[in-house]
Image (tube, rainbow, N blue to C red; front, side, top):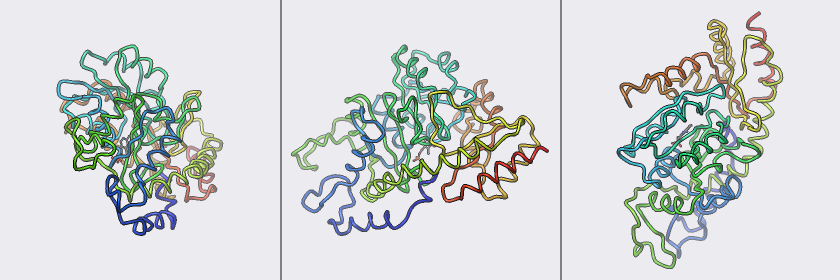
Length: 380
Ligand SMILES: *Cc1c(COP(=O)(O)O)cnc(C)c1O
């Protein structure tokens, strides 16, 4: 969430500098005209920070594109099934459908992420990939999910779009499975306006992803781009140099974004003391990125009251429930007429009780103390 809140002169200068460096806004070629390769530099930095053991880090035009590129790199297509979760962003489902594969949806557990018991029971011979999503900054149960993936020989694509900076046993999400996906859209932890990245653990996956996102280009070194050959049928999901330069500045700001988010999140954690309010579960060994604080309430009236006070204080409630329909599969009958099955309906009923409190680094810490005491006062 906070990436857009910290944009200042630094991003502006980074873009202006490209004008002085030869005005090349394309990530490839133009060797004689350019001084820098910003997207390549951004990729290198992302890999160093988030997934040092990956074979490759690749920047693309959006998070949605990154998911599609990963699926295509794995050869997913018509007749295949891909499992993901009912609490999600519609982008993940769109990326799956766009490959021709069928979407299979799991319920979520009290972390609001993929329910691993459901996952086991939904695997079939047609399952070609599993996409757990670290929703609203809290890691999914990656230890179990990776184990299930290995046992069934199915690659895992971690959708870490909403969880840049979250950790599992001290390691950043996005680097824990065969693929990791980031989004840099305007609502994410760090932003490039629009943009995304993928990390590939296996060399061959990285190679396929890189070719697919760039019309199949093999990018054979020492060969001019025009004489290069295609290794597969690709598409264009490239990132521009403007986004690359922008992203490098945001990445420098990332440690302070994380630190400031944690301060505000911790205030809510410490001061919300109301026995009618249940705080979202984070499994031991997992650390959120402090982007959103989610509470759950059985009492419908109290929930309405709390939503009201968050709106009045100018916080809103993000996707629970402000943008509920974009984040719960229960509403996606345009994707599948029979989408409201047992798993999806169970997830919907759980989410109906939740409220998401966005963490904004531009808001002073005292605002969060006040929200906590308002919530505590609410049920009295
Ligand atoms: C934002 C998001 C995406 C897609 O990212 P875009 O960059 O907006 O295309 C995918 N999955 C989840 C869970 C997201 O929150």
